[in-house]
Amino acid sequence: MSYKKDTICVQGGYRPKSGESRIPPISQSTTYFYDSTQGMADLFDLKADGYFYSRLANPTVAAFEGKVTELEGGAAAVGCSSGMAASTLAAFTVCCAGDNIVSSSAIYGGTFNLFAVTLPKLGIETRFFDPDAPAEEIEKLIDDKTRLIFTETIANPAIKILDFEKIAGIAKKYGVLFAVDNTLATPILCRPFEWGANVIIHSSTKYLDGHAAALGGMIVDGGNFNFKNNPRYASFNEPDESYHGLVYADLPSAQFATKCRAQMMRDIGAMMSPQNAFLSWLGCDTLALRMERHSANAKKVAAYLDSHPKIDWVWHASLPANKYHKLAEKYLPDGQGGMLSFGIKGDVKKAAVFMESLKLITQETHVADVRSCVLHPASTTHRQLSKAELEEAGVPENLVRLSVGIENADDIIADIEQALAGI
Ligand SMILES: *Cc1c(COP(=O)(O)O)cnc(C)c1O
Image (cartoon, rainbow, N blue to C red; front, top):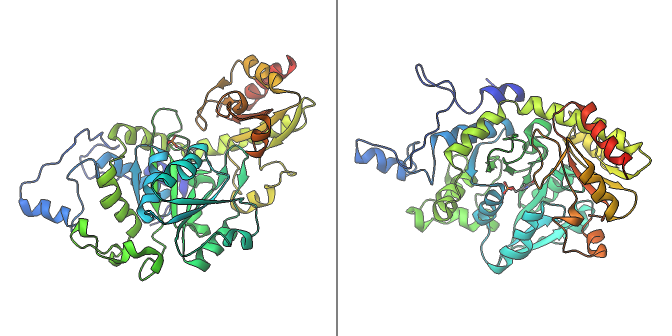
């Protein structure tokens, strides 16, 4: 029986047996008891499903992994300690020194640093492309050492919408694994596996948890990539000596997730905590409702800002004149999410006065939870950059990033109105 996404939000990932607790208990335990040596040996051999140590798997984390897997329509998922841990482990699952990643340049700042600064120190190179570039240009970056194409569904803070078919076409043509960070769209607004993605990354810290309560990350395996005899993925086709000769490409399903857990999680240990998995599982109950409200509110706020004389420009794909409106109609037809950016006419100082005048909307580095919040990158996260560097990064100095919450839209707009009146 396959259910609709809003049903999966409340019923997915955990199905208790008679007499068990209705929602997943927090399995606050590092280890698990077995009464036979064989029972444990079968787990180590991956012949049986079960738990032996919480660095590798935990029942509460499994409930959340199950819910996200069902929501995305994937084969399996691996819960991680943060979104950054998820991107790092996903990269390590396919890349080693000498390999390269071909990545969109319009990605989360932390991921950009990981790819541009940290992974190169380990011998993994990243080649960045403009996601709006034609396929022929992006293709030129791929060679026989390319192991991963990396993108974001809704890129932050430029709010660019990904042209999935263009990227999926390139990935298929060259037999390269296609990964998408779906954090800001969530499976409620877009399901990347339906558009050709093979791996989905989430920072569950954002909308999945939704309440700014728990850090977390998720790697979802689409189970739809053919690793068998693909020369790019020797590490899936050769026996893993650290796992007594297991050949991941020969597994019947979830080859990527299994290698990620058995090798990378085992060795690196950036596992999601049971407490955070519980909070995130619970938060996900209302994900479908929240995304509907976030999108509707952001659409109203975008339209309001767009007609305001003190506003220079507004980026949100719901606006008919937005560069990504057509792509959003195709890939995000049920709503374009709660993230928007806008420019205040005038200099950096005007933006700062605006930010400080807000009463309901708070200044935070966080995004994508139930409460509306704003950030002025030029005076905070991008403070070190010059005016020219800001322009180059696609973050003009007057840019304000607004994460629209689920409060009443009239109250959000009234707060913006009174703050704009003061500048
Ligand atoms: C926040 C974020 C991340 C990183 O997630 P953390 O949980 O903070 O490590 C990755 N991608 C996107 C799109 C994000 O917004």
